[in-house]
Length: 293
Image (cartoon, rainbow, N blue to C red; front, side, top):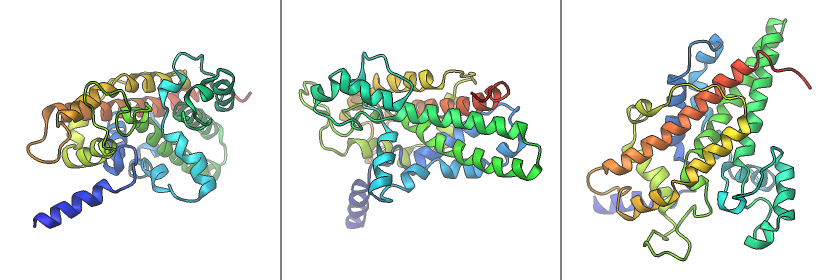
């Protein structure tokens, strides 16, 4: 029996590093759908199961090929330390140019994609979702409306993944999988801390009932990019508290579930759910006045 348990733990540890893991992304999406205001279009409420399923899709397709992975991987994170202090443009390509012109690429010895594009991906999908809702509002042909509904659910589902990523401190820092030197506080550098928190602990200890009480009241968002940057910045500030909890055994799978670990995970999952709910609802509300440029 002991050998079986050890084998299972090793198998989990060897799994690829996917943000929040499958269960975590589902919890974020479920928390969002359960907290939506009641003024969304009926078809959106009828598509909850698909929205939840799609929350894991960007991780599900990892490994599709070199071209797809090149564009997919950097969309899941932002190593905020590399860009801290810069006036960040809303255009991801201008951001790449800024990282070069500011000397940050040379300073840190990184490539243009190393910093990651998570806030840009969130803003892009939110803008696209707003436009799809506007097209749905203006469609006259019932068949057109039905097809647009499929687009809306797909885009909203993908957005759920990246909103969830942004609430995870490991996806907002260069310290994403083991603390880099210097390390005076003795934080873990075993390269398992990422999976230990977002996959193993969340799968083992967290349920939807832990998340829903922590979801914030709805907030109308009109500036998607700034909203995404603020979430990444907030997650980045929690990197050291996350590592301190890990050092003290809060995410261990052995023994009773740590209340401190559970509280931290619940708060971050709920932050992702709150953001996702806000983006879905705001895209719908903002679509009433959005116009083509």
